[in-house]
Image 1 (cartoon, rainbow, N blue to C red):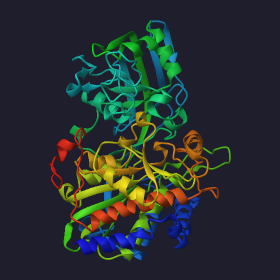
Image 2 (cartoon, rainbow, N blue to C red):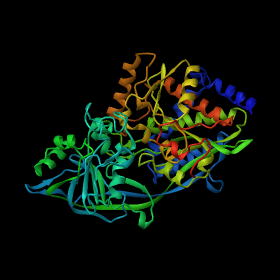
Image 3 (spheres, helix red, strand yellow):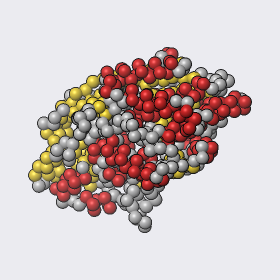
Image 4 (cartoon, rainbow, N blue to C red):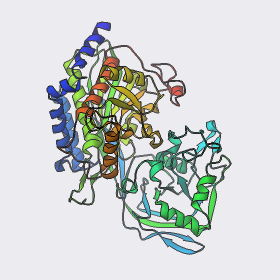
Amino acid sequence: MKIRTLLLGAAFAAFASPASAQDSGAAGRITETVQTLASDAFEGRAPGTAGETKTVAYLVDRFKALGLEPAGPNGQWVQPVPLLHTRLGAATRMAFQGPKGSMPVVTGQDLYVSTIRPDEVARIDAPVVFVGYGVNAPERGWDDFKNTDVRGKVVVFLINDPDFYAKPGEPAAGKFGDRTMTYYGRWTYKFEEAARQGAVGALIVHDTAGVGYGWNVVVSPGGENYDIVRKPEDITSVRLQGWLAEAAAKRLFASASLDLDAMKVAARSPGFRPVELKGVRFQAEVPVTQEVVTSHNVLARIPGTSRADEVVMFGGHWDAYGKGKPDAQGRVYRAGANDDALGIAGLLEIARGMKAGPPPARSVVFAAWTAEERGLLGSEYYAANPVFPMNKTVANLTLDILQTGGFANDVVLVGKGQNTLEDDMGRVAAGQGRRVTPEGLPERGLFYRADHFSFAKRGVPVLLIMGIAGASDLKQGGVAAGQAWIDAYTGSCYHQACDAWSPDWKLDGALQDIALVGAIGGELAGSGKWPAWKVGSEFRKLRPVPGSSKK
């Protein structure tokens, strides 16, 4: 076992060096992969489209060419993922009615909504209730609902956690990790909680600092949404879910003689109780185009030898946002060259490196997920219907957005203090001449925003590389240059047609991160080591002993 581990480490040693990776053609292969997946021929890689058909066929061919085996159910290369695909039409009614009259709202400007219900028309005529941050966390002594009945109503939330804006000495300060977002702060949690409470509508007040991106990202899906196909009894009660622009939210609260800024302060107290916007009703009638589409996860593997039933998994998502409105250059496909064609290219490069080495003791699975951009749906479907048992899945290592600013002196850690994979990251990074830097913007909750999270929720230790998690200390320009790269990407190109391959990309830093993840996974695959959750992690209870799991 020790000999095999050493051999596998040696096989990855060359790949762990950015210069060697470039000399061996890795940069060229990665560029070619990204250019292909982000080309107009793939139509933005939206699930359930002709672009998906081409993408899946391309990935299967690539894995076959590398000599991998199919890892899907029944010996297939793919795992079918049934998805409900909805798109809202032009609203015949969209307004708030209040004591001061009607307040029409312009979709895309004042409000953005979508639905994940299989309705022909989304209809709402219901009172509006402000529920603060909408957090129901008994383990933290926090309940924003206080048994208030919001069934049949529209609830309005604030984004992030109650302590995000809390000042020292305020009751909320430190209750939820200060500036580090918990899952309670994520928009996905808000909508889930609205459904659990029986609401018919859920609107979040947009706040760029609190959510981590601008209004342009909020509206980028264009009224489309996806969900896993659910049984009738499991369908959400929320008919419309979405966001209110802050200026529109202030007008709305003012129509009920309330001050939004004052309400934000009040919501930072554990004594906060929901506030009904007296006399205000939200009225909407919107046609819904719906269809059930079968999308696909692509799954490939290198079979293990002595511990073949144990699995080390690498993952990334193949999907992007498909076709949208033309941008300033006339581009219509939001093809996600970085998010996440570059991550997929990295997976293929890791697969190439591992296949060239000695057979691993553990099986190694490479997963290209569908519908990440629609709510981590492909990975969630797999985690709920695993091909390989969760308690035999050693770790999930995910690549989702890699920095293209050049060589870096560090690697950014997402989710500090979660599990021992971060210790492995530190050791391998040191071997590359780099250090580990904790994510610079923990308030954005990136740990909960990529496909690895579907596995963390089942107790599988995870590690995520995400280039927008914090400014890399670039060899040319330092942290300032790293921040400039993030600002340019998130400010203009994130989820937009601008996320296209560019000859200005400097892949050296991306190659460093790909090599690092490949080396960590390679060590796990060649050994009997089980990473563990650290004391204090909310996921430790799901796998308290390495190698155990509730599933």
